[in-house]
Image 1 (cartoon, rainbow, N blue to C red):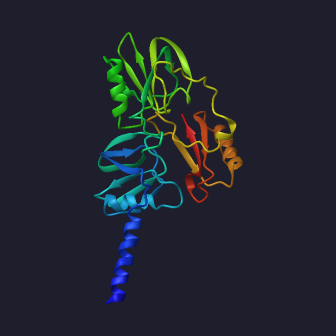
Image 2 (tube, rainbow, N blue to C red; image 1 turned 45 degrees about the horizontal axis):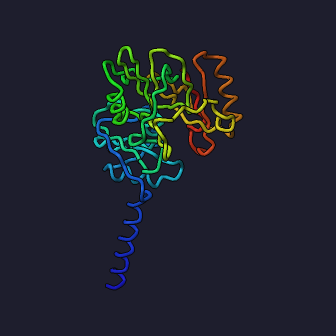
Image 3 (cartoon, rainbow, N blue to C red; image 1 turned 90 degrees about the vertical axis):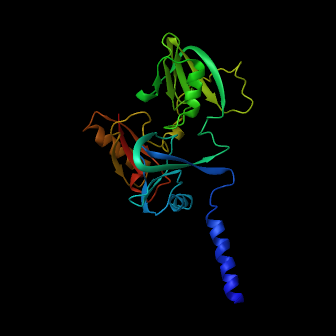
Length: 273
């Protein structure tokens, strides 16, 4: 009996350890009837959302950030991306869950609003449904903070029409263009930022050393962006495949290489716009 009691205590301790795989400052956020667009790296069987989340927490091949769970099919899709990389689309009988951490920049809903930058608009793609007519700056700010389909980082406000365009990027990621009727605002998470004296830093583009590990998909497009996936030996081989594909398709505009995914087919992604 003593041996059995010891075994039960050990099993209970192991269960507590496994079910608390997340760091103390991280937690799961759940959204029903939603799924992530253009990710889903691995499919596993799962009977409950809790076991699906646990598979994500303990997965070793890549850093799992979110899951799509289909209770009727008992399927669980593990994803290396979340709403900072893509966006959510409506889908019945699917529950989307993602890991959020308190000290992480990805979710800016509690950060400080800075701006305006007068007569400026952020370049880059947007989702048509994120354009809200007849608004005010306060309504735009509220819409940006509560946006659920993607992590809103900034917005453009057209003074003449009240149109508000929510963006996933900010002035460090894209250029600000001269638009006389538009003002630019962003949610800034820098500690101690002064909204009265804040000015956007000069955009200098992406350094060459950061071009290799860029993760897709191309944010803001609703069409079939991902054209092909390949397992390659290195960055040069991924680039070579991209150059060959551009000779056959004018739509082929970019490729993504992730050196950490050595055993996955989507290590080298060929993208079109």
